[in-house]
Every structure is written in C-alpha cells, then in structure tokens.
Amino acid sequence: MYRFLTTPRWWGINIFVVLAIPFCVFMGTWQLGRFEDRVDSHREAERRPDPGSVKAAPLEELLPVDKETSGRHATATGRYGEQFLVSGRELDGKTGSYVLTLLRTEGGKALPVVRGWLPQGRTAPPPPAGEVTVTGALQASEHTGSSGVGASGALPRGQVGMISAASLVNLVPDDVYDAWVTLTDSPAGLTPVPATAAEGSGLDLKAFQNLGYTGEWFVFAGFVLFMWFRLFRREAEAARDAALGLAPEPAPAPGPATRS
Image 1: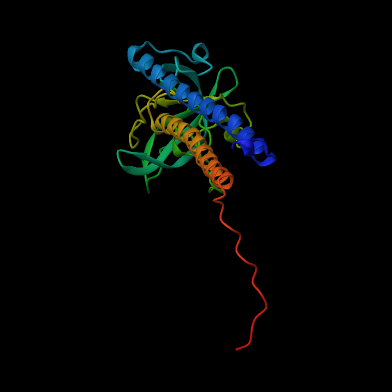
Image 2: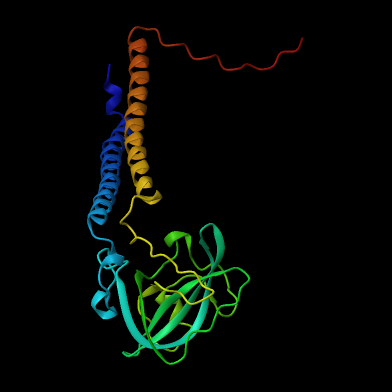
C-alpha cells in the first residue's frame, strides 16, 4: 500500500522534510539562545553599579567601548574644533539636535563630544576657546539602524546623520576616536543628553524579536511535518481505494460537438 513512498516524487518530499525540520529546530534554538543571552546581559547590567557613580577615568583606560565601559565617565583634555549638529534627535518628547563638537586631544586624535541637546530652531552656542578638560559618559559609535538613527541622503553643511568615526573622518583632517562622550554638565542653552545602555545589553524590542523568531521557526517545523502527514494520508487513501477497486474512473474525453 505504501509503495508510493519509493517513487521519485516522494523521495524528493522526504529529503526536503528530513532537511527542513532539523534546520527549523536549529534556527529556533539559535534565536532562543540569542534571547537568553540578552536576558543574562540585562541581569548582569542590573547587578553592576551605575556607571555614572563610578569615579571618572582617563579616556584611554576605558577604550575600546564594551558593555563594561559603556556609560562610564571618561575625562579627556584638548581643544575644541569643528562643530556639527546631529539633527532629528528627541529628548523628553521634543525634537531637536545634538550639538557635537570635536575635541582635539593631546594624542592628536579627535574625540566627538556631545555638549548637549538643542531645541529645534535655536542656534548652537560656540565651544569655549583654549584648552579644556571634559568629563562625560562614554558611548560607542553609532551605526546605521542603531537606536533608529542613520545617514539618510545628503545633509546640509554642518550636519551629520549619526555619531560615527566612519562618517566624521571624511569631514575633518584628524583621526577620530571610535567612541564619543556626552557631557554631564552642558553649557547654557543646551540640555544634557543622558547616556544610553550598551547595544545588546537590554531587553529592548530587538530582544523580543529574537523570542518571536524562535516561535516562528518552531511553527515552521510543525507546519512542514503537518503538510507531510497530510500528503501521506491522501496518497495512502488513494492507494487503498485503488487496491479495493474503488478508484474513480477517469472522466471521458470530450467528443466532437454535435449539431442539434
């Protein structure tokens, strides 16, 4: 009755099922592992002391930025140079811009410093002249898709789409740190920008997307198995009917049209 399983058609179906189900299970398990890693990172971040409460350290001691050093207060000394606006940034439900000024440090590299948030329509205050020492929360460079930011088309002169060494290095003659700091005390007219959690360390929307993908992959595996069983039952019933002589007779071929 089940000789149809040895036909080339069913060999193809069986091979597909044998490969598809383990693949779906593997992908679902992988996505679940990603979600569990995010949960573990979130718990570790909650157990760690507030980065802002830890004594500020020299910038070079905290690089490169990782989950441990993100948000730590860093100090750097240098002279302010070029200034840009990072437009389209929201703070407390209002839209404005980050005032981003490059600090040329003693080592010769430029450190992006967010001196504060500027309401829309206002003019950014100029940076102070002379040598300054800044203290701010350390952050990793942004990239396209991070926190909903990214470079979108050509921007007006003096503006950048994201705080990234890769984009700033094309606008200034200096090497740029692959990190930035947001000042804890902003000058008059600007609002301090709070530090954000390190990417991949919180239970954000992306973390729950991993959990959703986990369910989808297991549903795909169940669907493949369901469709195989459905096809198998239909073929088995057809084979049984044929063995009992109950197979439906083929419909007669249409004959030539007759005239009335």
